[in-house]
Length: 248
Image 1 (spheres, rainbow, N blue to C red):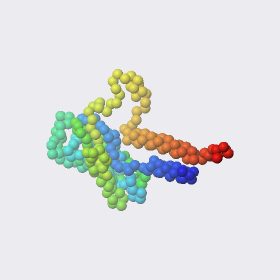
Image 2: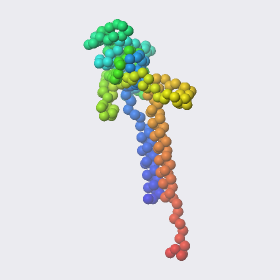
Image 3: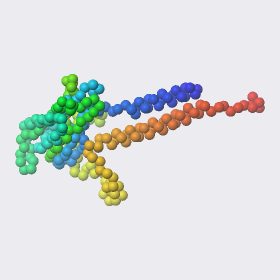
Image 4: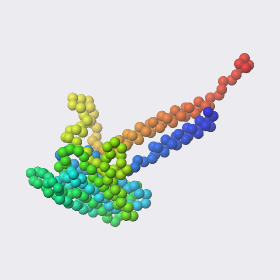
């Protein structure tokens, strides 16, 4: 292969890999953290990114699952946004703190005031306190995102059975037994000491960690491949050994 062709191959490969690293993952409405203790109380955050290049997000609706209602729902005030809750009658009363609950919040709607909408390239977070949570399973929060031009994006697709992500996934909160999310093994003082010394990450940062590690690993792989391709290209520049009369 000629030196020109080798260099062209290296350049094309580097460009393609650079675009792969730079391409952003599709953003969607999420609930953070995505796992909570079954039967307990939890503060969750609905993170809403704006996916439009020209329009702003003016309204966000989150529907609580009717098959897994909770007795107590509290919404944290958010400057620049009006919030309204819809209360519905339960098909089956709930028992909470020794009392029967016959109705609960079924939908939360946030509406932006003038100038507070989520503009292109931005996101907003909406905090909610829930409990007591159901004893098992998962809670699927179907969400609607309304843009300033009237477009409504429906984040309502439930998880698939084959593990692939649906096109417009609904936020899902998994319910785990108490202690099930602990990763420290009993009787391992070194691991325990390391965990204690490390700063505790906030719940709002939980969804960013895996992305950061994945990007770092991908960049490391790209750099290694680039070095290998450059070495391959340089190998074409070595001059052929001079021949002597005896060789002819």
